[in-house]
Amino acid sequence: MADISAAVVGAGFIGPVHVEGLRRANVPVAGIMGVTPEESKSAAAALKLPRAYTSLQEILADASVAAVHIATPNRLHFEMAKAVLAAGKHVLCEKPLAMNSTESAQLVQLAKQAGVAAGVNYNIRYYPLCLEAAERVRQGQVGDVFAVCGSYVQDWLFHPTDYNWRLLAEEGGPLRAIADIGTHWLDLVQHVTGLEAEAVCADLKTVHPVRQRPKGEVKTFKGKAEAEAEKVQTEPVNITTEDYGCVMIRFRGGARGCLWVSQVTAGRKNCLRFEVAGSKCALSWCSEQPNEMWVGRRDTPNELLIRDPALLTDAAARYANYPGGHNEGFPDTFKQCFRSFYDYLRVGDMSAPPTFPTFADGHREVALCEAILNSHRQSKWIEVKGATT
Image (cartoon, rainbow, N blue to C red; front, side):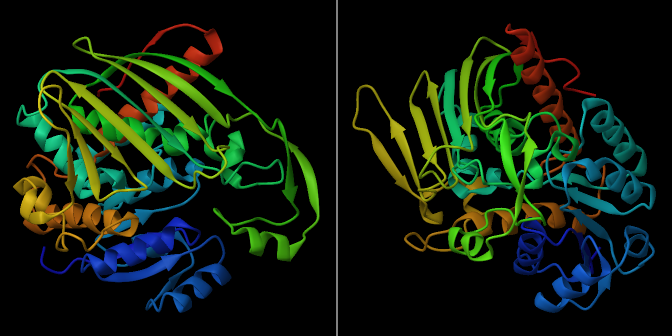
């Protein structure tokens, strides 16, 4: 498939990020679809796209579109992905893949039957030093993994007046901080270490059980000045999803893990951290300093590896497009994830092992979230069931 074009469903925060990433990955974007025809037209005009779609059916009927990117609220993912698969088009969906593991398992099977590429946008895998960490583990440079710990913390929901659709269980699911950002960490560390979570013990907390909802929707990560300038009227709304929580993890083979997730930690804008403790060395990385990876050693000096294609393994260097000292960050991860997905499509062999995060990976994270929620509700360790299909 030499000529591949994509369409993006969703014109909020992340949809335009997909458009930018696709363009940088040299994938033509046929158009975009928003919540309403007006939003579709506005987004298409702002992004200078050739077409504003008014419905998913219109996208699926467009023969020029080979792949559809789903960047909508969580509750819409299942039906939209199902429709795209039925139309025989490739699909790349934002996480979570679905609202429950029954739905996500069904999507895995439908993708197999359709014979198309079906991916989930776990873009954080594609920071070059995360790929480097994964390759070093696979090559045995880290040794046996004893434990992995870390966190994903933000502050955009710090105030009780902060509001977004993700707060509502009916829109995003019963888990929020874990499902929204914690799944990125869980996917990343399992990808880096090659370990599989088999049981979890979780303790979650809703800091603001009542928030003030503006009478009119707000954007994700709206700036303080913009929010204050509007001075919109608000109404109280009950919140059941968690603002923060801690999850202990048992991995198959004996390794242990611990994750701290928060969306109410002042000053932390978007900070993911992990540290892997192995029998030969330790590795530590932080998304707010993404071009540095700490390598810890017992008997020789520690190292600080700077992202530089000349210093990385081949597996990581191919996803580092700029020389050392020319920093790469969040937008680049979308480009690289999409490169991986569309390079696979261009080869055209759907029987080859996928080179991108798949629906099976997305299903695993949904099953893991269900175990975390059950653990919190029952205050005990819960086995992760149904993570594979």
